[in-house]
Length: 325
Image 1 (cartoon, rainbow, N blue to C red):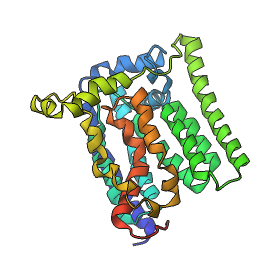
Image 2: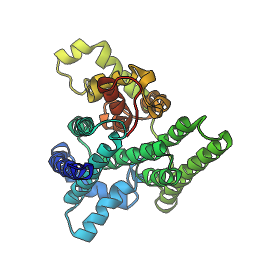
Image 3: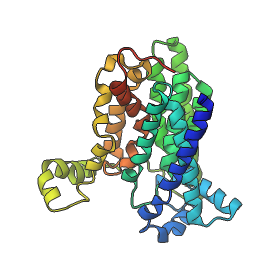
């Protein structure tokens, strides 16, 4: 079978997988479904809470599906998730094929699908699948040295979720010493300015027209430490013995990748240059979310998948200096 035909049939498999995963969101949202219409209307009216109000693609895309195709609001959100997830799985396979063979890339892609239920929350978070898809495209553009596609990804990502900004230091890290320093710094400054302009315009628009506060984020360090991490790990036995599942939710972050939190760091010098250069972004990403994110919301760690999983699989399945496909 030719590689093109094999990829066609693999995509057919991934579309089926996306179709299986998508209805699970109804289970996760069951307590929020009654509030979906109110939540959606608050977004359109510019009266939602920040920063969700500023993630415009997360509610404008379902609104477009709702208006153009006449779907119900719930089905429009599910249709968006299905389309994004199906495309994400197909592109993730192609992304992983740069370093792995087809069987390994398929295993990595299905692993991503398998951890989706762990990232499900009892609240509507439509921005996350598109955020991961754009991270994959962004890493791909950085690896291939494509500045303009990276800039396009950055613009779309900023309209969806601001964590896409991590692609800018990734671009700098990967190209440091590979491009003339002045050129690289100018390109990095351009990407930073592009993100800042889009980020600011969206906030100023909603602030001026609807009076939405410009507040950025609520500090979450005390919540993560005092409510989650310290009780979950210092009092682990009592937490589990009394069945306090809410306090135990930080354990899901460990189970999300399991040993693949560790495997990427083994035989580190044998990894491709791309991963060796981008490795410092992982602790920075985690530290940033310690202060402005919530560690019990495991979906926040999904953008690390395109780095952790191929590196972990290379540790398991490859020996010696690794080439690229």
